[in-house]
Every structure is written in C-alpha cells, then in structure tokens.
Image (cartoon, rainbow, N blue to C red; front, side):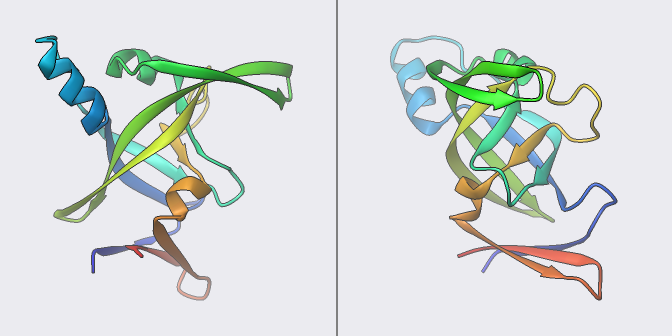
Length: 145
C-alpha cells in the first residue's frame, strides 16, 4: 500500500504533487493531433478536510490548458462569485512513489497570492485517500484506501 508520512507544517498538512490533464482529455487531444500540455511539477498542496473539493488557482488552470466545464455560485469574503469547474489529474508524490488521482476541481482567482501552497486538496481527494493525523508526533500519514 502506497503511503507517505510527513511532519505537519505551520500551515497544516502539505504534500508535494504534480498537476496535469486527465487521461480522457489527453486521449482526446492525441486523437485530434493537438498539443498535450506538460504536467506542472513541484507544486505544494494543502490538505483541507473542510473543503468540499480541490481548489486550484486560475493561473495554473490556464498554464495546464484545462478545459473549463460548468460554473458554480459560491459565497466568499468578497461576496458572491462564480467558480468554474474543471477536471484535473493530480499526481501525489510519495517519496519515490506516485499516486495519480483524477478529480473535479474549482478554479479560484488569486488562490496562491499570499500562500505557500499551490492548490487545496478537499474531501473529494480524501474519499480516495485516507488521512491519519498523529498529534503527539506532529505528523500526518496519507495512504490509498
């Protein structure tokens, strides 16, 4: 079973990851003989058990060339906004091992402007992975269910 244990950062549980297009999108692009965007590496993801789904900065979505699907109205500190949904393939790095998870994500403008992470992993990722906190050791373990 793939798993990784990390110290909990002052921000919370952070994990290294890569982000790219889904297999379905990549297959469609190959069939159309179109360029397939490179996966973005060296990203930091914050695991947020209070978030419903993955949140990814709009600038990353544009760099990845991810197609935007539907819009969802959400309430923020700045008032109501529309969030655009996309499908993203996240590759979580477990030391030398990699675990690929394809999940819906919502684009968020300026998500990473004042942060030390690039995206937020919500409960849709945690439905596939198990998160175990060890408070006394100040660590967390993430493993595939």
